[in-house]
Length: 99
Image 1 (cartoon, one colour):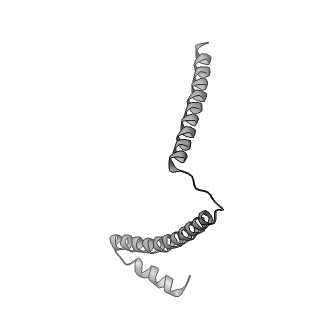
Image 2: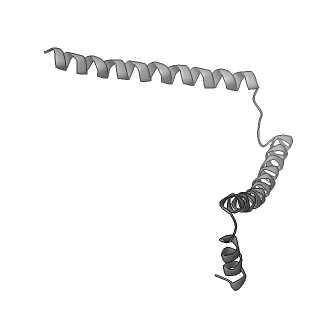
């Protein structure tokens, strides 16, 4: 730990609890902003890459309606299998206690 950091910590302990909380909040915000900028830069690069793939014909787009219909179909199918599986399990447990 650097001498400057130790000095800042020592001075921070002289602050009131409210001031320490505010200091901690400001420090966390400063870290979040740096991380958000990195994430935003990475997403910008990813979007640019995807647009180039579509424009070059390497990647093909799909209609949003088709994608949403596929997602809903999968969700309904998964919900059906989930409820069927657990209704069987409940039936087996009920039969065990009734016998």
